[in-house]
Image (cartoon, rainbow over all chains, first blue to last red; front, top):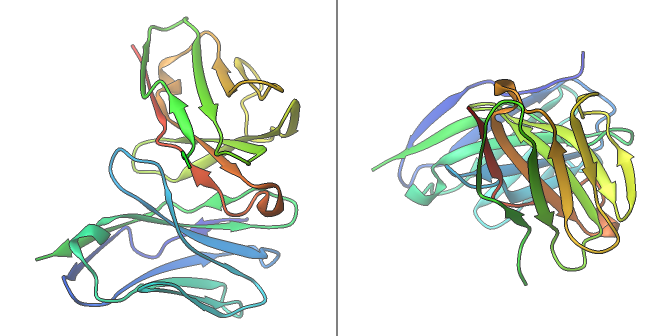
Length: 111
Length: 115
Protein backbone atom coordinates (compact mmCIF):
# COMPACT_ATOMS: atom_id res chain seq x y z
CA UNK A 1 0.00 0.00 0.00
CA UNK A 2 0.98 3.65 -0.02
CA UNK A 3 2.78 4.87 3.04
CA UNK A 4 5.33 7.27 4.27
CA UNK A 5 7.35 5.95 7.13
CA UNK A 6 10.45 6.69 9.12
CA UNK A 7 13.18 4.21 9.98
CA UNK A 8 13.75 5.43 13.54
CA UNK A 9 11.25 6.90 15.95
CA UNK A 10 13.97 8.60 18.06
CA UNK A 11 17.39 10.05 17.36
CA UNK A 12 19.85 11.52 19.85
CA UNK A 13 22.87 13.54 18.73
CA UNK A 14 25.54 15.57 20.44
CA UNK A 15 25.37 19.30 20.05
CA UNK A 16 27.55 20.33 17.14
CA UNK A 17 27.32 16.99 15.36
CA UNK A 18 25.43 16.45 12.13
CA UNK A 19 22.00 14.79 12.21
CA UNK A 20 20.51 12.55 9.56
CA UNK A 21 16.82 11.75 9.66
CA UNK A 22 15.57 9.14 7.21
CA UNK A 23 12.23 8.57 5.57
CA UNK A 24 11.00 5.77 3.31
CA UNK A 25 8.10 6.08 0.93
CA UNK A 26 6.39 3.47 -1.17
CA UNK A 27 4.46 5.46 -3.77
CA UNK A 28 6.57 5.77 -6.90
CA UNK A 29 4.08 8.32 -8.23
CA UNK A 30 5.01 10.85 -5.53
CA UNK A 31 6.30 14.00 -7.20
CA UNK A 32 6.92 16.28 -4.24
CA UNK A 33 8.41 15.85 -0.78
CA UNK A 34 8.67 18.16 2.19
CA UNK A 35 10.14 18.18 5.69
CA UNK A 36 8.52 19.80 8.69
CA UNK A 37 9.73 20.44 12.22
CA UNK A 38 7.25 20.36 15.07
CA UNK A 39 8.09 21.57 18.55
CA UNK A 40 5.97 20.56 21.50
CA UNK A 41 2.63 22.34 21.54
CA UNK A 42 3.19 24.03 18.20
CA UNK A 43 2.19 23.55 14.61
CA UNK A 44 4.51 22.05 11.99
CA UNK A 45 7.08 24.46 10.63
CA UNK A 46 8.37 24.20 7.06
CA UNK A 47 12.03 23.26 6.75
CA UNK A 48 12.75 22.34 3.14
CA UNK A 49 11.10 20.73 0.14
CA UNK A 50 12.16 18.96 -3.03
CA UNK A 51 10.55 17.88 -6.26
CA UNK A 52 11.00 14.46 -7.76
CA UNK A 53 13.08 15.80 -10.66
CA UNK A 54 15.84 16.70 -8.20
CA UNK A 55 18.02 14.54 -5.97
CA UNK A 56 19.44 17.15 -3.64
CA UNK A 57 18.51 20.53 -2.29
CA UNK A 58 20.25 22.67 0.26
CA UNK A 59 19.00 25.28 2.67
CA UNK A 60 20.48 27.00 5.64
CA UNK A 61 22.18 24.20 7.64
CA UNK A 62 19.82 21.65 6.10
CA UNK A 63 20.05 19.39 3.08
CA UNK A 64 17.42 17.09 1.68
CA UNK A 65 18.45 14.07 -0.39
CA UNK A 66 16.06 12.11 -2.56
CA UNK A 67 16.85 8.63 -3.86
CA UNK A 68 14.02 7.59 -6.13
CA UNK A 69 15.61 4.25 -6.92
CA UNK A 70 15.12 3.01 -3.37
CA UNK A 71 12.32 5.43 -2.49
CA UNK A 72 14.26 7.09 0.27
CA UNK A 73 14.36 10.63 1.56
CA UNK A 74 16.71 12.07 4.15
CA UNK A 75 17.14 15.31 6.03
CA UNK A 76 20.61 16.33 7.07
CA UNK A 77 21.09 19.01 9.71
CA UNK A 78 24.59 20.42 10.03
CA UNK A 79 26.05 21.43 13.39
CA UNK A 80 22.94 20.44 15.31
CA UNK A 81 21.89 22.91 17.98
CA UNK A 82 19.67 22.55 21.06
CA UNK A 83 16.97 24.49 19.24
CA UNK A 84 16.82 21.71 16.67
CA UNK A 85 15.28 19.36 19.23
CA UNK A 86 11.81 18.57 17.90
CA UNK A 87 9.81 15.98 16.00
CA UNK A 88 10.60 15.91 12.30
CA UNK A 89 8.05 14.77 9.74
CA UNK A 90 8.48 13.96 6.09
CA UNK A 91 5.49 14.20 3.79
CA UNK A 92 4.86 13.26 0.18
CA UNK A 93 2.38 14.26 -2.46
CA UNK A 94 1.22 12.76 -5.70
CA UNK A 95 -0.61 14.62 -8.44
CA UNK A 96 -3.90 13.22 -7.21
CA UNK A 97 -3.49 13.27 -3.45
CA UNK A 98 -2.83 15.71 -0.66
CA UNK A 99 0.30 15.78 1.46
CA UNK A 100 0.61 12.49 3.35
CA UNK A 101 2.67 12.62 6.52
CA UNK A 102 4.89 10.02 8.12
CA UNK A 103 4.77 9.23 11.82
CA UNK A 104 7.72 11.43 12.78
CA UNK A 105 11.18 11.15 14.36
CA UNK A 106 11.96 12.71 17.71
CA UNK A 107 15.35 14.42 17.53
CA UNK A 108 17.04 15.11 20.87
CA UNK A 109 20.17 17.22 20.99
CA UNK A 110 22.45 16.35 23.89
CA UNK A 111 24.64 19.01 25.51
CA UNK B 1 2.51 39.37 7.96
CA UNK B 2 0.50 37.29 10.38
CA UNK B 3 0.64 33.55 10.01
CA UNK B 4 -2.23 31.10 10.01
CA UNK B 5 -4.45 31.92 12.96
CA UNK B 6 -6.46 29.26 14.73
CA UNK B 7 -8.84 29.61 17.62
CA UNK B 8 -9.55 28.58 20.19
CA UNK B 9 -6.19 27.22 21.24
CA UNK B 10 -7.84 24.76 23.58
CA UNK B 11 -11.44 23.56 23.50
CA UNK B 12 -13.11 21.34 26.04
CA UNK B 13 -16.42 19.71 25.22
CA UNK B 14 -18.59 17.07 26.83
CA UNK B 15 -19.77 14.10 24.84
CA UNK B 16 -22.66 15.03 22.61
CA UNK B 17 -21.80 18.72 22.34
CA UNK B 18 -20.69 20.53 19.23
CA UNK B 19 -17.17 21.77 18.56
CA UNK B 20 -16.37 24.65 16.21
CA UNK B 21 -12.79 25.27 15.21
CA UNK B 22 -11.81 28.41 13.34
CA UNK B 23 -8.97 29.14 10.97
CA UNK B 24 -7.89 32.32 9.24
CA UNK B 25 -5.34 31.68 6.48
CA UNK B 26 -2.27 33.77 5.83
CA UNK B 27 -2.85 36.93 3.89
CA UNK B 28 -2.99 36.20 0.19
CA UNK B 29 -3.64 32.49 0.68
CA UNK B 30 -6.89 31.20 -0.73
CA UNK B 31 -6.41 27.49 -0.03
CA UNK B 32 -7.11 25.97 3.37
CA UNK B 33 -6.44 22.47 4.67
CA UNK B 34 -7.45 20.74 7.88
CA UNK B 35 -5.38 17.97 9.45
CA UNK B 36 -5.88 15.96 12.62
CA UNK B 37 -3.07 14.73 14.84
CA UNK B 38 -3.29 12.14 17.59
CA UNK B 39 -0.55 12.01 20.28
CA UNK B 40 2.79 10.78 18.92
CA UNK B 41 1.37 10.35 15.44
CA UNK B 42 1.67 12.17 12.17
CA UNK B 43 -0.89 14.49 10.73
CA UNK B 44 -3.85 12.95 8.91
CA UNK B 45 -5.45 14.88 6.08
CA UNK B 46 -9.11 15.72 6.52
CA UNK B 47 -10.28 18.30 4.02
CA UNK B 48 -9.04 20.83 1.46
CA UNK B 49 -11.06 23.94 0.67
CA UNK B 50 -10.93 27.04 -1.43
CA UNK B 51 -13.23 29.99 -0.94
CA UNK B 52 -16.81 28.66 -0.97
CA UNK B 53 -15.70 25.30 -2.37
CA UNK B 54 -14.72 21.94 -0.93
CA UNK B 55 -12.03 20.56 -3.20
CA UNK B 56 -11.20 17.30 -1.43
CA UNK B 57 -12.91 15.87 1.63
CA UNK B 58 -11.62 12.34 1.27
CA UNK B 59 -10.17 12.39 4.80
CA UNK B 60 -13.29 13.58 6.55
CA UNK B 61 -15.39 11.12 8.53
CA UNK B 62 -18.72 10.62 6.79
CA UNK B 63 -20.79 11.64 9.76
CA UNK B 64 -20.69 14.47 12.28
CA UNK B 65 -17.83 16.34 10.60
CA UNK B 66 -18.21 19.26 8.22
CA UNK B 67 -16.06 22.12 6.97
CA UNK B 68 -16.63 25.38 5.21
CA UNK B 69 -14.63 28.31 3.93
CA UNK B 70 -17.07 31.13 3.24
CA UNK B 71 -16.47 34.09 0.99
CA UNK B 72 -16.03 36.26 4.05
CA UNK B 73 -14.58 35.11 7.35
CA UNK B 74 -12.54 32.19 8.59
CA UNK B 75 -12.73 28.54 7.66
CA UNK B 76 -14.74 26.50 10.15
CA UNK B 77 -14.34 22.84 11.05
CA UNK B 78 -17.46 21.66 12.80
CA UNK B 79 -17.82 18.47 14.76
CA UNK B 80 -21.30 17.58 15.92
CA UNK B 81 -22.12 15.28 18.83
CA UNK B 82 -18.50 14.87 19.82
CA UNK B 83 -17.22 11.59 21.21
CA UNK B 84 -14.06 10.86 23.19
CA UNK B 85 -12.36 9.57 20.07
CA UNK B 86 -12.55 13.06 18.58
CA UNK B 87 -10.01 14.28 21.14
CA UNK B 88 -6.98 15.36 19.14
CA UNK B 89 -5.05 18.35 17.89
CA UNK B 90 -6.60 19.87 14.81
CA UNK B 91 -4.31 21.86 12.57
CA UNK B 92 -5.24 24.21 9.82
CA UNK B 93 -2.86 25.14 7.03
CA UNK B 94 -2.96 27.46 4.08
CA UNK B 95 -1.05 27.84 0.84
CA UNK B 96 -0.84 30.40 -1.91
CA UNK B 97 -2.62 29.56 -5.17
CA UNK B 98 0.61 28.73 -7.01
CA UNK B 99 1.72 26.22 -4.36
CA UNK B 100 -1.59 24.50 -3.78
CA UNK B 101 -1.27 21.17 -1.95
CA UNK B 102 2.48 21.63 -1.54
CA UNK B 103 4.14 24.16 0.71
CA UNK B 104 1.59 24.37 3.48
CA UNK B 105 1.90 26.86 6.33
CA UNK B 106 0.39 25.57 9.54
CA UNK B 107 -1.29 27.29 12.44
CA UNK B 108 -0.64 26.46 16.08
CA UNK B 109 -3.60 24.11 16.23
CA UNK B 110 -6.66 23.62 18.39
CA UNK B 111 -6.42 20.97 21.07
CA UNK B 112 -9.87 19.42 21.44
CA UNK B 113 -10.56 17.49 24.61
CA UNK B 114 -13.81 15.59 24.94
CA UNK B 115 -14.82 14.71 28.48
